[in-house]
Image (cartoon, rainbow, N blue to C red; front, top):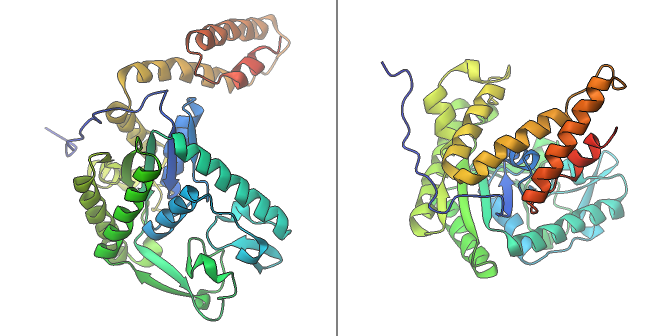
Length: 333
């Protein structure tokens, strides 16, 4: 008896490998994928603007990387003594406006350069809702527009909230991908929909929001040969289908659910050679995280020496890997 619905996941025709430069952008679930890849030494850059949920903010950010858009203090606003950007996560905020601008522009520059050479762009969309500044709060530089990517916990009456129409999402995604392909013709796209449920919008509204994203993404995948879909949303909602796989908030997938999705991602999106190498690197990463109760013992010193040699051998065999952190840790003898 089958206890889970089977999803027909198609393997990528040109799977991701360790030689692929991967830019990830989108919701918090993007960072689950990005952190896992980064820990296993894939060359990744994730969320240069911080976490983004809507297709409008994702597209706007990607186009700003193409143009290497630079910000000034006039593009920021001050709230509770902190300077913020409406287009960036609060990790870019600072009590000194010039410092915030410096961090933002460095991230813009990094994203511009990385996108030039990227092989894959992984986009995770979380919500169809968009937030626009009302006249009460519209005091930031108008050249950035009035759609915000992050509300920074500002008062609710500073924003008008609405759900984007499916046709509008299709149009903005299609235009964005065309400009990205012009900027970097070799770029390939992998779309996912975040399984994180936006219950604050309401259960029915969350489902409507996700449905518009799913329909729009599949439209894009049908139009672009270089665009593909990985069913992270369906794996959690339709395969796991149980609140045991959610955190206590009943909104975010928990560790077992995330690991399940990541295992499927590796199986269907990463090539065989890279998956074998991932297992070797995973052993070293786990060993690096090992905390010895008695670091001066001969047993621990032998542990370090043994893993240093394994890491050195792997680094020599695969020169494209960056194992400096592991080599540094295991050399503490």
